[in-house]
Length: 318
Image 1 (tube, rainbow, N blue to C red):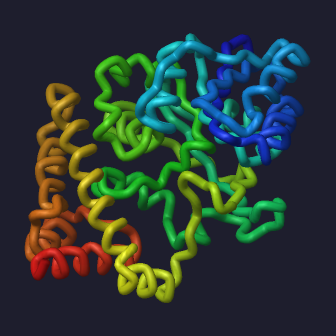
Image 2 (cartoon, rainbow, N blue to C red; image 1 turned 90 degrees about the horizontal axis):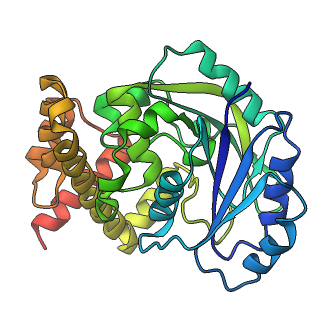
């Protein structure tokens, strides 16, 4: 393939695991790529390590002098704006890529129609020592990735794990990166997935391509879907805070996506985003019920939806 391939890695205090991750990338079966790394102010030796390896392989490029005040989402979006490529891979600092990740993902693009597209895959969940926890992220999370691609589901819940994702230049060209309201998006991978689903193609490759490492410093992770975890979380008070935060950011993201893309959305899709206003914190149980069972916009799994109802009931008495 005579195309430019960019792997975009954002780092922050990742010295503990980053060597394994970079090694798994540099030894991929598909070798014609550039690994772009941008550090977000590490203080643990990550920068010093990166400076030692950049001269060891011409495929490694360190991006400097790009400001960022919006965390991981801002860092990745700034990188995409800086890099000119035909295909882009998001990459975390603490996972391990399986040997054919790049090759298999790029091959999958041949199955798609020309145009904006994003491909994502399954993951093997591992602990900090790379011991298997689950052979499938989606099984572990009790999620159906095919149901997840329905617009009614994707606008309320992100099922696309960014570190498995690859997208093409055609998608980047319609993202309006310079005007994305980074402060009001839930996460960069979700915003990219929404854009692909509504204005291009979102494709799930049903194989794991990554060992998804779970450890105490994960920004996001793969929590188990047990009832006990939900009950403990809700009754401790921590869960309610998270559900309220989730409702708020989903509403803000949907409103921003709707406003930015209004002229391109179909009338049906506009109604979906307008309906999602019912998730904002001021909404009561009846509005949430209408959202789920009239508009068809709901999370996968009864426990997740019950958490939303619990939030509405508790806030009504607050």
